[in-house]
Length: 107
Image 1 (cartoon, rainbow, N blue to C red):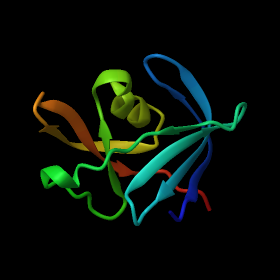
Image 2 (cartoon, rainbow, N blue to C red):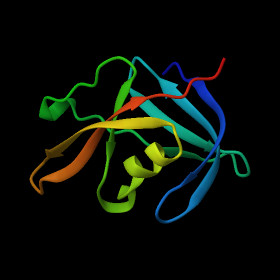
Image 3 (cartoon, rainbow, N blue to C red):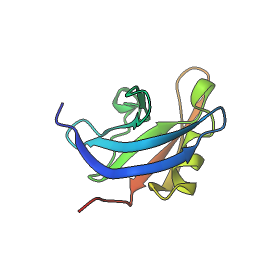
C-alpha cells in the first residue's frame, strides 16, 4: 500500500473514544486510517465493499457504520475529514456503510 498523510493532525470524537493524530490515505486501495499521535496505533477507517458491487470514486472511501464502527462516518464528517455522500446497505444483515468524499488535504 502507498499511504500518504492527508491530514497532519486532527482530533476525531468517535462514539466510543477520541483519537488525535494524522489521517493516512491510500488512494489505490481506497483505504483510510488514523494514526494515534500518543500510541502510534492505527485505526482503519475504511472498508472494501467491492464484493457487493460498490467501488468508490477517486478521493472517496467507504466507511462501515455497524458494530464497533457505528458512528464513525458521522465522526469523520464532524471533524472535517470528509463529507458523507451516500448511504448503502450490504451483506446478509443489511449492514449500513457510507460513501465519504475526503475533504481535508495537507500541503
